[in-house]
Length: 418
Image 1 (cartoon, one colour):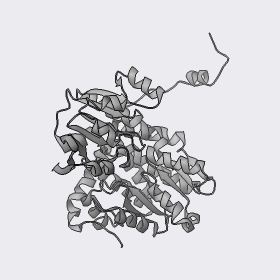
Image 2: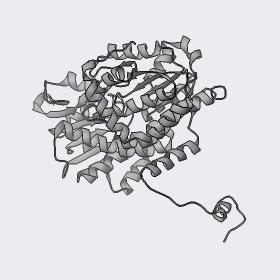
Image 3: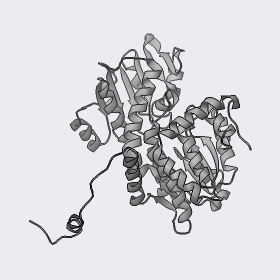
């Protein structure tokens, strides 16, 4: 078996973490048990480009239980948990290509290694694998049944590909499932981002002035959790509807150029690039902390910050002090990469349970419908979304009401009015 990881000796601690996460992922466990009996993915090669975490490991075990031949690589150079990668290789026999802190050359070498397996299904968290498939590995497109995408950022790229006629395979938009983005993006990102900031800095959030750039589902979650820690939260937006929503949710709405002058903490969560520029940061409050929880490290200009720096030093792991001319200091977390995964452990397993249930069912759906799905972006059927939510509630011991036949008839008719 081919693999490229940091150290196999890390496997024992990784296995324990995988087991703990699995104990909290009860919906995925139910799917894994069914997959083990039915083998719906038998003979299917899957290449997954995801964050190497204990939760992802449980998804890989579910796919393998379903009969799939799985290969895993990292979707972010800094988010890999080396002990998890080691356990996947040593304990579970899953080829894994990921080393925390790998350079860009190694990162793309690992993506290439995953595609060297000639997968019939690809899974992405940010669309790097499917993009490489469409640029440098076009000859393999005819071998691919389809792909699935986990993130808002990845969906932005895929929609652009589709618009330009560049997309050549069916893609399941896992991020569009209600049981994914309403929970993972909001509650997962909110909690794990605050967790990452606190681990990197150990600051007190109560009383701090914090700016959240972007009020999509991720931004909403971050703003909510910061307010829960008694921070004074402002939101920056370019969409007037989202800005109005933030205002009516009780947040102050400000422009970045205005807010950055007096805020203690700024977090980007937009999926876009150059949201915060070097020029902005030179006008920022002295000592401002800058973090990103959007997928790629382009939301604020880290490379430009480094070039403009008079001096740099690392004060704590993943906490870098940047000094500009005039001795203005800013503090950058995780080199601008995903703060919740680089400095913390990513989303809690309880919420990834639903996200990865969607991924597992998306793979099954691609196999079941491989002759029917057209090139384009597809959403997992609503009944599967509902099933995941129902299973999650049942796993939590919660029952809900059901419509009566009279109520069903009323909701499906138009004759009965005032």
